[in-house]
Image 1 (cartoon, rainbow, N blue to C red):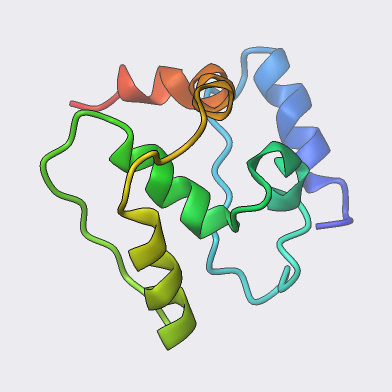
Image 2 (image 1 turned 120 degrees about the horizontal axis):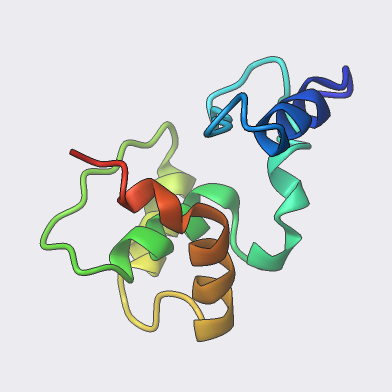
Length: 105
């Protein structure tokens, strides 16, 4: 993702031409997940673990999770016990992605 695509999408969003920017976790092109690592505030959690912890911190009764490796299963199992994320991390994620909740129909 060093081709400037993400930065261009951010500019389009700022101009009101794009509402949301989606980034797939299942990318074979960006095996290092360079763009997603810009969310360094989620460390020490991986992106998938932080995403699962964020979902579990919401008022949900179930969550379906896929995985590709036994290590990811173990990581997911470590995520299911509260506390899921610290309040400041939750606040930052809600600041970044809170508007998505209002788009679900």
